[in-house]
Length: 243
Image (cartoon, rainbow, N blue to C red; front, top):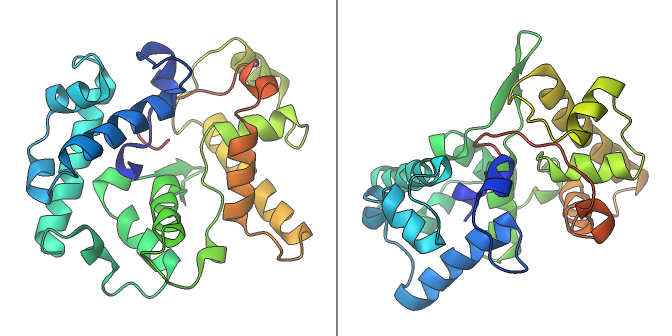
């Protein structure tokens, strides 16, 4: 699921289940497929196309997201076959820490998330870090270092921080968000917004005196974003495969 945990910029254009967000709609389709037929094998992943994944998610196979999802899942399957004997958890062999596991995932096309800003690379690694954190939380990756992960930079956490007054945006960016204009992925405002949210969460973690890690604060803010107040206001949206 972390391999296809992106598409928030397209959520207004997909077919949502009643009472479900865009992400919850996709996750429900994957869960039901696993419950009915079990997980895809690595070999099956390498053969997925937009039509196959659209059938699982009950979406239009012509929607751009379906092709992007299929490409990401094929990449996961190819890496599992080439490097880990086709085993999902073979990925854990040789990983000495949760950040190390995240870095290994970040090198795959399926989890690519590096922006450029002012001539330098900004490695956000949102989904790679989240996948490593989820494996740790599930008890299958009992590795140290989870507290060293950053916030999982997407569009919802900056939205919550903005609504709560933690982030104050320039007038032009605020107007664009409130007008529901799409932000160009990799543009200075979009990169700055994600980076400012990551930095703010680091400051919050520091203020907690180590009681809460950045990943834990990120989770609390993400869940807070499901509240009516936050859902009633336009959030920043960008169409990309990072988040």
